[in-house]
Amino acid sequence: MSKKKLVFSGVQPTGNLHLGNYLGALKNFVSLQKEMSCIYCVVDLHAITIFQKPDQLRNSVLETVASFLATGIDPNKSIIFNQSAVSGHAELAWILNCISRIGWLNRMTQFKDKAGSDKEKASVGLYIYPNLMAADILLYKATHVPVGADQKQHLELSRDIAQKFNNDFNCKDFFPLPEPLIPKNISRVMSLRDGTKKMSKSEESDYSRINLKDSADEISKKIKKAKSDSDQIPDNLKDLENKPEALNLINIYSEISKINLDKALNEMSGKEYSFLKKKLADLLINEITPVGKEINKLLSDKGNLEKILEKGKEKANIIAEENLKNIREKVGLI
Image 1 (tube, rainbow, N blue to C red):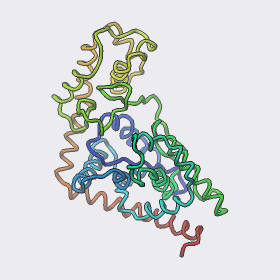
Image 2: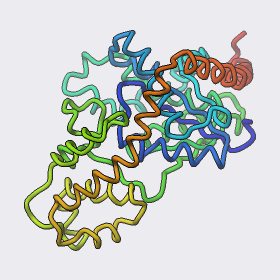
Image 3: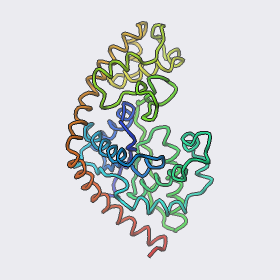
Image 4: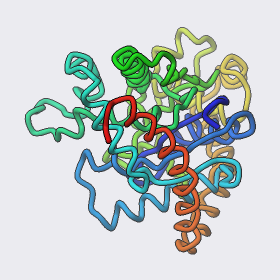
């Protein structure tokens, strides 16, 4: 498996997955499994860099698995498991902690964003989690990683760590340098309340996002209340870019209706935002509510979800242990 193209990607189990996850990651995951071998991991070790309530974390892991399945990821084609179930992630992360350099981590902008103004109170895990991300990828010798703009820097770090390991232990090409898979034509889905911020599970207002389990009524209300203005929709992209909330709504409409942005803008220009919102809400209801119903159906049988994780763990462990055996030998560990 490791000699072929192999995709690895991880999703944090930190609450309801939303429209941004769906358009930016999950739909792409489904497409990739038709082309390559894929490993999709629920990264629960990453989640605990910030305190999580244990019961809530367990439920979030299962809900993330249900979301994978409901959007079309096939456990018979792709490996689905939770990160903590394969101890090789933590073991390789420690080895890579000793390969990675503090200067490299100091350049990671996401730590600065997530730690906020008082970095002294941030967990050590939050600081070094890019090394764990590198371990996630390199443990399976993944060749390709789907990334958004906010994760590209971490993938570059993974490549630096892989290259340094290969050089330090005189084992050229032992770790492949993973390539980014950046989906074409997928724009970042922004908050419905602030078009300058990415749609996020952590934003306080639930009206900032469309959750995959939202009902038709909830979707309709959220789109209706989405921030816009009283002007008519502009007829050119330059003017639209000066209206981030409007640009976000047009982007989402473009993605859901499967037309390019220019065509979407041409269709909507000169109209009131209420017209766009009505059409967008209808499209989202048709696209998202079946996914939400399937998630709830899958969650009614948590035992089955746990079985899928167990089978995925077994498959992942076979690859991980084979690679770890070679890694230990390279490093000199008995």
